[in-house]
Image (cartoon, rainbow, N blue to C red):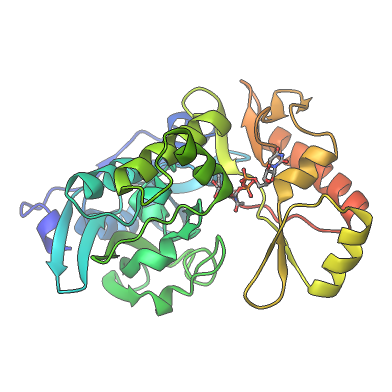
Amino acid sequence: MSQFQTSVDLSPTWFAAGYPLRAHNTFGFDVRARYACRVENEADLVAAVRDPRARGLRTLVLGGGSNVVLTRDFDGLVLLVALCGKRLAREDRHAWYVEAAAGENWHEFVAWTLEAGMPGLENLALIPGTVGAAPIQNIGAYGLEMAERCDSVRAIDLDTGTPVEFDAAACRFGYRDSFFKREGRDRFVITSVTFRLPKLWQANAGYADLARELARHDAVEAPQARAVFDAVVAVRRAKLPDPLQLGNAGSFFKNPVIGAPQFDALAAREPQIVSYPQADGRVKLAAGWMIDRCGWKGRALRAAAVHERQALVLVNRGGATGADILELAQAIQRDVLARFGVALEQEPVCL
Ligand code: EPU
């Protein structure tokens, strides 16, 4: 995005070899990278990967580092994405199109859109991480996925060094999934995202926790976007640990989706099971509920623990390693499989 780039040709900032990544992953794992380079614009990014120091090395893009489990030192080049800028790119009768650079903090961006009178992202308030990370796992919460507001994604193709625009269909969004998490993973680095925010706004306040919180403030009937934003912030603060205080990567597992026959058999055995019917006839299960039922909530394996208020979140109580977290995750997966016959898939990317 040219308006975000400096006109002077400054080279990107390289850090000393053995760069500590502790402050760059929300679990707070104490690992190092062979090289790290801070990139502030697209030209920086291309220069960094073409630098002789990067030759033959793997690259890892870190924005907020909020969806990654770093199990060991990274023997490659870490790109610290620091592209900044946000603007109303255009508007028509139906929608505002807002573009934000990849390095922008997600929550601050959401707050900015609301202050500018452009609602539509309020359900996604307080999700840790950056704008550039949002499409990779198609962040979602309280009845909204980022995919529903995505107009396009701009990325640098590392093979050619050129920018490519992906429309929403090309991003192949799925539940906590996208092209960028799969086929495009090592090839494309997202530099900006454009959101389409419809002018005909309607509160999306059906999610149980959210409706309950709005009811506490007598704001159930036609709540304003700001009220939804505040309610989401309150619910998240009550349930989810702040990564700055307790290292974590949000939900550690995806909510599994199973076929109707399997669900019927399971529900006959476990009548309390929390489930959400899907449009395609399948059924999504609340992994947090199943983990909780297996007795894992609040339990620890060394310094790796299951959060006390949300069993879907694994936390670093201080000094845990990525390997500790994975060992804990595997023990949970074994128990859930044994009791419910359902395999839990890990959500964050593991390196
Ligand atoms: N539950 C329990 N015990 C627990 C946790 C949950 O019984 O320890 C029950 C809850 O009472 C509720 C159900 O399980 O009936 C679902 O729990 P919740 O509403 O907290 O949501 P979730 O399915 O656990 C998902 C997302 C979250 C998102 C919330 C709200 C995934 C993997 N997780 O969690 O996303 O904030 O819904 O929309 O889809 C994230 O992806 O990092 C994340 C935090």
